[in-house]
Amino acid sequence: QLQLVESGGGLVQHGGSLRLSCAASGLTLRYYAVAWFRQAPGKEREGASCISGISGTTNYAGSVKGRFTISRDNAKNTVYLQMNSLKPEDTAIYYCAAVAAAGCIATMTPDQYNYWGQGTQVTVSS
Image 1 (cartoon, rainbow, N blue to C red):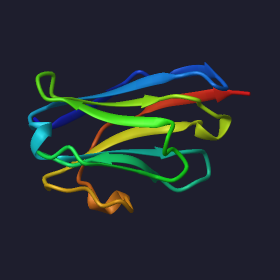
Image 2: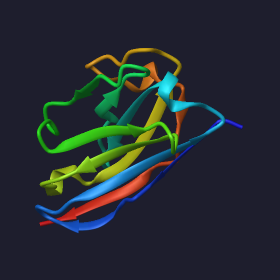
Image 3: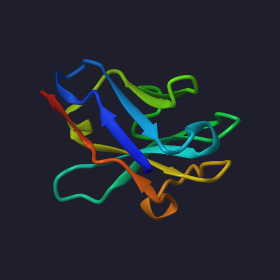
């Protein structure tokens, strides 16, 4: 059974850090493009970052560039999102998503991905 499971969300103060994990079963993430999306209340789901399969090339949305880092541990079949200098506007449910493709497009949209996790809540207090 193909499954993505996010973890690591929580409540953090403005300026703090969190590391999200996306653990996969039933698919080998190094052969997939994997993205982190987020959705705040009343807003559309938006892409934050993605990492290409094989090459590990990364892309970031302008709003998180320089603060977030996406990475992959092939041995653990897990993709991470290290989030630093968090702001209240980063508050959202964060989802990981995967697609059997070599590359990830810088302009990430949900329809590009067909495997999704259940999401993890990130709340940044001011």
